[in-house]
Length: 473
Image 1: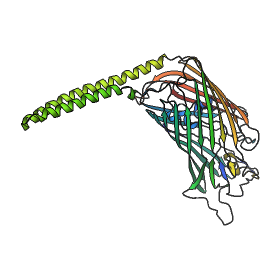
Image 2 (image 1 turned 180 degrees about the vertical axis):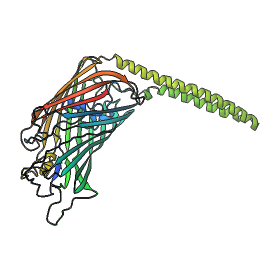
Image 3 (image 1 turned 45 degrees about the vertical axis):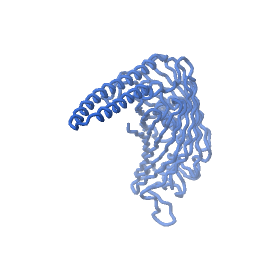
Image 4 (image 1 turned 90 degrees about the vertical axis):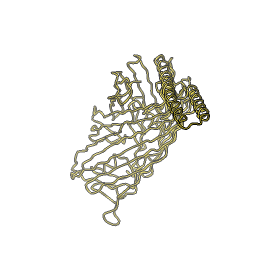
């Protein structure tokens, strides 16, 4: 599924004169404070690194593509999801970046994300992307648009029937700045590594992932000053030398209470029919040997051709029967796995705990303060004001299923550190998943149960709501 995330910020024109940054020697710190992520991750307060299951795991643990859920029973599985979120301007006091300054009109905000995972046996590959767009109009009526994209491309492998998953890939960023006088694009990527421990029939998991810092550099048309000795500008904006996604270390645990297992060892259906394949292969080898001996005893060329054709026809008939038998064995193994999954109890309490550590950004400026060059206010001390030190974000989540196979409830909380050196703020998240209907997506996917998923994120000076239609698991 294509993945797009959109954030719109419309700041009304001001009569006062803007104060642009004095130099290009700074970077835009793309640290993301409020939790913008797949909907299940949001509703669990972001505490997902130790669980790392489904497409939500792509943003939390690089090993997640190889992590199979209890209902992931086939040799080949495809997982697709997406969600939409937007903030609520309930109290008219939005401060998205927690800078202590109210962000004008930040309620015009829509966030859409999605991802996909392809699992083949013990291997998995995943893609996730999001896109944010900021728009601003300065006092002179000149507008600017900033488009930020974040991406994850991951490969992972499971060992020990899925009890250990190792993953690696790349985290990328793009940022486009469009003003009346100039269009710029910054691009960067860096590796990320992950591990997930999932002991079979033990209700415990541990996961960790490390993401190297991403430095985005201008491409195609780097910023140049209009006159020597002046900073490169476009309209009201002094342009940055680059953008930075700080390095991240994310670790977490998952514990499940109740009769439902957190995980079981994965037995690939392809491996389960090895005995039948071996028997069929032996039978075909014997037929080839018998054919060669029979033809060797026939001296007449015409008779040899006739006998060879008859043997070939009989071999084709037997091979077709053997293929049907192999398919029956595979279907029987899948049906038995389906029955085992359907018989599992649903009652459980899933507890999640994680910590996200984010690195510094040298000469960092937040996106909001970069855009703030176009409105009234001093920029003194802004450069280096965002991301001067390492930040810590503890996270907690809980998931229960009060109405088995129909309703799932989630709640969580996370601490959003202040990237400007002040006191952070606590977020409280809530979510639900309600079963609706069965659907095969116009025949494109296996027929599955679908449900409506929601999440709410509440914090001082920030509120958002997320909605999604996804497979009910």
